[in-house]
Image (cartoon, rainbow over all chains, first blue to last red; front, side):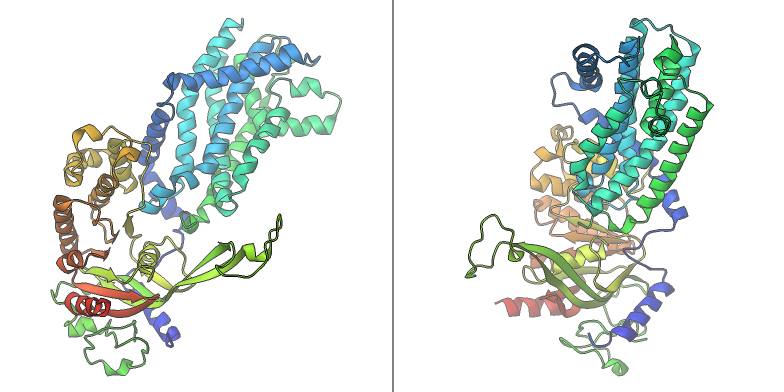
Length: 296
Length: 292
């Protein structure tokens, strides 16, 4: 076309006159949030449907939701409690390990599912228009649906292992709430980054495993590295460790200091900061690329 | 003021815009509002719903392997530059037109001419390398390959599809029967995963879901061709209905009868350019003459 410039200008003017917007842009933050709120049932239904469908082909079905972390904990218990006996092993090892493994599984599930949320829903993204932030949110909600039975089994194991039941147990509710905010933030970041660089999906298992080993799941960060100030501090502000400590502090009451499961006000502050900062930053980061999803 | 598009037959004598070059004639786009001789049915409203302005789409693809007949030697274990080079495929080369309320626009052209790319661009799914697409809302694209969620049942897909389109739970429940009947899905299939559906059944269901809300702009890419006779009839009716509720429907199809029955305007795309744009009969006649 030779008449690009006048045509471009008049087309834009005509579009503006009739309230048409140029496609490929992203909506303003406020209208994006409003659209997202309108699709809240969609996010919940999507998460619920996927949650129900995820194990239907397996013979044991939904039982796998709790079997998987239990087997996981059993394997780690065997390796780090029996085969490789460590001096820094906390005295009441089973409840310590189970709370750690089960809580970490929530994080790693959100991380990997969040990263896949756009790519694996390409059909949906290319067929229908809706704010794409629904998808990472739904992947976190799906993990939250699984968290219910998982926490129940965790409490039973903790109870059987000899921990007294107490009112403090209710503290896991705010702990998991803050952790969900953090996980949603992680899911937003991972979902967008995977769009730009698909290779990231290959690295996620390694990042998760590294985090698993530094997060004090079978050792207590505060007792293992009591000598090294900076290292302990870094390991302590590690968000996975923060949330695991909050859960343990709520559930485990025997020898809390000896076990290294004591959470103070600072741990709660860290939990709030990590949760709020990650969910806000992740959401903004995800929103900024809204026009790009589904184009690959 | 001028808004030259690729081409149009009824050059309703707007001579000050002779500037537009290219394929054939001249579009009296905006001016046609006054001249109003544009659509045969006269249903086109004054409001534009989609403005496509000098749209260029370039795909960057990594060509793998060597071109056939290349004499280049094989280099083992070495990823030579020729094995992975970026090639630009210019799928659309400057398409311009304006679609108005109440129009049903057919898109014809040979395979690989850029029809599907045009629809994807109007749906906002591929970025333009030059030019722009303006639209009121994000148009909905229905293609043969698009899926909703394959591993979930048809029933779940209807719920989720409706919610994704912005309906409330109650609204979806109210429309559920209507969608099932429209799609013509048998009761016993509704709780089976969608991946077990035949391609015709899946396409019917997708269309039924998308057509259950009134879209300002609906893009249909060959989706109707897979349906059976009864469904084709229902969907043609639905498209006409959407037109009367002041939406715009785009229909890509190789089945010219489907286009003649449902569309009042046709775009003919050839090699990424708009070859012709005008009333259905004229364009379809010219297109079928060129093909034979």
